[in-house]
Length: 188
Image 1: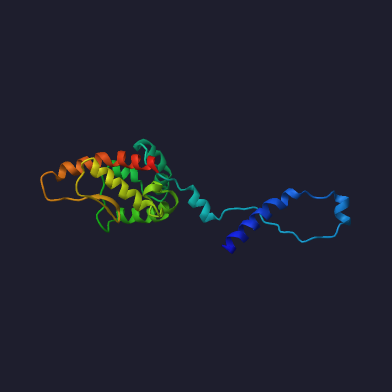
Image 2: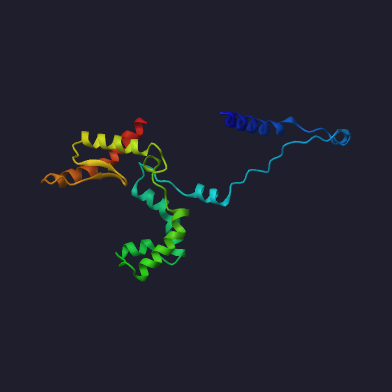
C-alpha cells in the first residue's frame, strides 16, 4: 500500500511541476538554483511499441474485417519468403519437414509476435476472466441444446458423446457459439 501511495504522489508531483511556471530570465540569474525532478519525455520501448501495434480480433468481427486485420501479418510473411494467402489458394499442405513447412515456420517466428492478431480479449489466455467467459458461453450453449460441450485448455470444445445426435450437436454448437459469445460479452 505504501508503494502505491508513493507512486501516486510521485506521479502527481511530476505532473504538477511543469505547471508551476518559470521565472523571467533576469530573475532566474539572481535566484538560487534549486534541484528539481526532471523526467525525460516518456518514450515507449521498441518492444512495447511493437506490442501496441499488434492488432486484436473482436468477437463481432466479420471474416472480411479479419482478413483486413490479417494483412500486415500476411505482408510480413511474404517479405520473409512465404505467402500464406497463395498457399491457401493453391491448397498446399506442407508435409512435416518439407521445405515449404520450414519456410512457413521461419517466417512465422518473425511475423507472429509482431503482426498476427491477438484473440479477442474475452478469449485471451492473458485475461484472468477468460475462463469465466468460456464457462458462461458453455452455459448458453447448453441452454441452446448443444450437448457434450465443455471448457478445455484450448477454449470451448464440443465432444462426441457416442450417439447419433453428436453430429447435430456439433453442428448446432458451431452455429451457436458466435451468438452465445456475443450474448455473454454484452452482459459483462
